[in-house]
Structures are given as C-alpha cells and as structure tokens.
Length: 503
Image 1 (cartoon, rainbow, N blue to C red):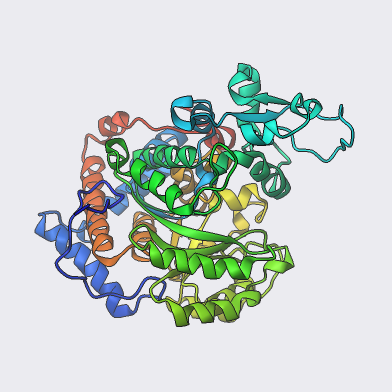
Image 2 (image 1 turned 135 degrees about the horizontal axis):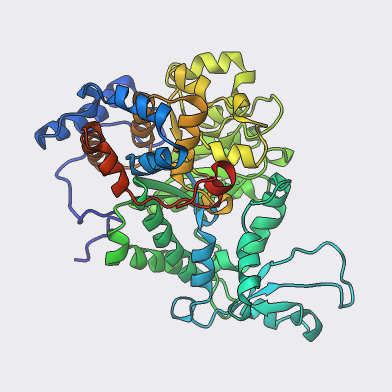
C-alpha cells in the first residue's frame, strides 16, 4: 500500500480517531475553540513546556524592547518570533523574484520549456502603445509568432545582468507612484507563461516554504488554480498530472525540512464570465483532494462590479447541498468606498474575510464580528502599497484586534511587495504598539481559524506554544543581547525602502 504524503515536516502517521471539532469552513463554536486551544495547551504540558499564556514577565520585557531597540535590532527580534500561519497567501504572488529568475532559467527544472520576455515594440505591423514590457511567453507561444514579433522578445536566459535585474524589478511594486493599476494590470500579466509551468510552480512552492520557515512561519494556506498548467508542447496538462508533480516535489527531503505545513485553496477569479461555474469546479476539486486542498477562495478587483458577492449566492448554496466541510475564505472589503461586500460575503458562507478594509463603515457588522462570527485576514503591507490606506492611521486592524475580532497577520503577495512575514509583524508592532499578548493572539488565531484538519491543527497549536515558550526563555534572561546577536535575519526591499533596514 502506498502511503500518502502529509506535506509537512512531520512523518506520515495515521490517527486512531478524529478529534471532535467543527467542520472546516464553519465558524468554530466556543466549545470547539476551547477544545482546540485546550488540546494544544495540554500537549504542551505533557511535553514539560508550560504554555506561554501562563508565563509571567515577558510581556514587560517585550514592551521594553519594543520601545528601546533600534529599528534593525527590533526587526532582528521579530524575525525570530514564532509566527503561526499565513492564511492569506497567493502562491505565485509570494514568489521571490530572484528565485523565480533562477528557476525559470534552470533547464534541469523546466526542461525544454524555455521562456521569452518582451523588451520592445513598435516595429511590426499593427503594433500599438498598449503593450506590457517584460510580458513572458513560453517557447511554443514565442515560436508561433511571425519573425518580426519574435524579434521583440529575448530568451530569459539570454538577458544581460542589468536586463535580468530590470525584469525582476518589473514584477515588484518598488517605485513611487506604482499602485493597484501597476499591480493588477501589468505585474500579473508579466508572469504570463511562468505560472503555467507545473515544474516551475512546484519548485517555487518549496523555495517559498523554505523562506517562510526561516522566519518562523509554520503553516501556509496558499491560493492557486490546479487546472491551468500546460505541457512544453503547448497542450493543456491533465490537472491530476500537475497535482502529481507538485506532490512529488513536496515529498522530497528538502521540502519536508522547511518545517512548514502546506495546504491549498482553489481560487476563483470573481469577475470572469465563467466564475459561477468555476466555483462549482473548485468545490468538486477540493472535495476530491482533501488531504492537500482545504478551501475555496474568490479573488480579483472588487471595483469590477461583475464580481460582486451577491452574484454567487445561489451557487454557494447549491454547493452546500453537494459538499460538506469545505472552508470558505473570500476576499471582501478591499475597496475604497463603503458597500455591503463584507456582509454579503458572510452570506455566501465565508468564515474568513480577506482584507476587510471598509469594515468600519458598517457599524452593525462590527458589532456582529465582535462575537467571533468570522476571522479577518490582515495584510498591512499590501493595503499600503495598493493604496487602500494612505497611511496606517487609517487602517482598521488595531480597532478590530482590540475589539476582540479574531485577526491574523498575512502577506498576500510578498514576492511582489519584496517583503516577508516579519515586515507585517514589524509594521504591526511599530505602527500600533502591539503588546506581546496581542502578537500571540494573532499567531494563535492564525492557526485556530485555519482550515487544517483537526488533529494536525492541534499539533501545530501545541508546537506554537512550545516555540513561544522557548522564545521567551531565550530572550527573557540577562543574556538577551547575546541571544539577539545570534539571530541572522533576512530583510528585503520593502524593509530597506521604508525603514532603511538591511543586513
């Protein structure tokens, strides 16, 4: 009998029974919430590690460090903090662009699928000014064009070092004035054929797990689409074959060694003509692959009215007739104006809300959310760069957190922001003066509200408490300065541009 991979750093095991708990996609009851947390704490006690909630004094130490450390040293400290899960994570959007260039030009990974990127336009019949520099094609797409248009493109592996750097930078929001138009209308199209190569996708997934694991993230729910992969000859790949390629890569030792547990959400582009049908296909796919796929999401610009939540009410109700236990985490409230998208998204059955920027325009909804109705996925760097807030004084996160609404920090598209999870934590701590207990609440809730199956969730919550206790012991003593000097953080372009932090 072939054993199924667990897609985490733990060896495969078969639980003797399923722990009682709410079905994924349903808001946990108070009983089940206490059960999950109680299980985690009990496991920590069995291991001889007192739960962090019982540890006294470190909150004062953390407050002192927050106030007195230099920005680089505070970043160093927060890099070492255990961070729980990243629940709002677009798989391709979180690729590190240096990694992407290396993988896309490595024939041992992508085989014969050579990629070509556009450097110029205007010399061929029919050319217009409406073209995207550095849009990337597969070898088959490039070969199907006439000679004049092929000359506008250069193979990725033939770019000069300066061109390669410019190509990588074109996939990031790293210049003043770039915002949501650049992000939605240029950066994502530039990825082009890269996102349709299953071997590239699998390798980049592992490299992302490695990067997040290094800064203390232990769980990721990545949003992706399983049926868009192509073969090198240009034909569409059977989604099951793409799935096998990913699973084989996740089962290799270096993937398991990242220490990060991975689950996937099937994401639907909400404003497309076939989006309702895609919601059905997403539910069917997740139901057939439940050991790795745990939920359905909808993404895409909410200022495109074709994607409004009420359009999907009937299909989500029909899916609940067909399937049970499929988590729903849906983008909502990522807009500038007041509207009913958040409450309409809750009507679809979502128990997690992505962004929620306009939540404070709906007083009744805020009152309901205070009763634990849903979890809010907070993306601080994203909301600033896409200009949904002009500055952090306008952000809803501290209000939600301190009103008791379940919240967690997440990275959204960290590769395109040139950031990491530590940048989210650093922003939260410096802009809103988060306490140690508030940081821990975000970390715990990011695991508690995940769609991970209950036995694995209880294990991760227990390990989180263990890691927090170890962190408190490490930095709670008189030798904390020496321990801090041992941390070897990695900071990317966002930290350098915003705070002048580089290591």
